[in-house]
Image 1 (cartoon, rainbow, N blue to C red):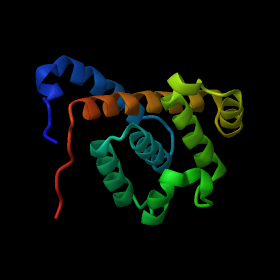
Image 2 (cartoon, rainbow, N blue to C red; image 1 turned 180 degrees about the vertical axis):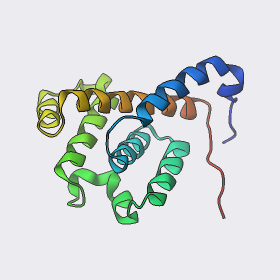
Image 3 (cartoon, helix red, strand yellow; image 1 turned 45 degrees about the vertical axis):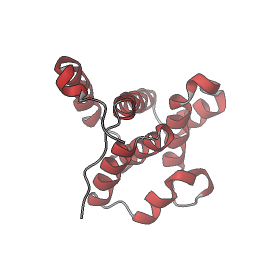
Image 4 (cartoon, rainbow, N blue to C red; image 1 turned 90 degrees about the vertical axis):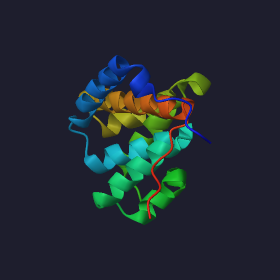
Length: 148
């Protein structure tokens, strides 16, 4: 499918605002590998090829194993992820899909066992940020570059 339009060219001010929020999210103290897993999982849920490709490439470059990346789609059936990672992925899925089922109390309580209040708010900012970029990329059919 061909890209529909270049949102950054059409609305550079909007892009700059998103990039400013993205810079804030990138500066958060959440572990880099956890940020990557959450970004990829949200992108899988939203069907965002561009972001899955970009963040998987970044994760591998940062040392994430291909086995864990391959298992991310079924993280809840895998033993490859820590309790903290599992809790973050569950939180990310629930917040991403909140229109369908809200964010269940049990997901919140599990997240609070693994994250401080500040960490959970910051994790939520990460989820919001990733969902925003996914919606742009999916809506305007952004495609990743072809690599050899």
